[in-house]
Image (cartoon, rainbow, N blue to C red; front, top):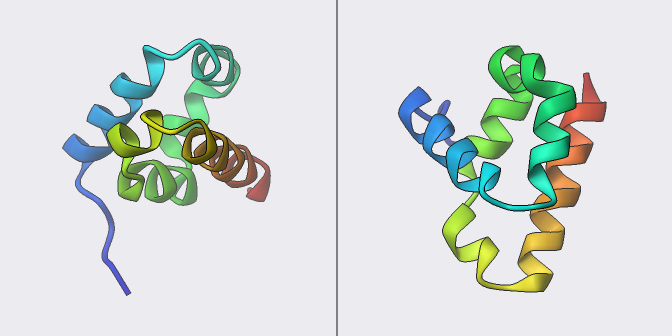
Length: 73
């Protein structure tokens, strides 16, 4: 099992995601969760965001994973 992703990686992935139209509204509503929810930070931190954003199918999977992590609380 992988350890926790470094904060720098999580923050970089969040910044990449914030450039997308679909992520910004999710982030705006759940900003505190992106800062404090360890499970959500884990999902975002280990995601291959750049690769995911190149494929519509992978983008949709990433979106579902993020929404599930938010609901997982």
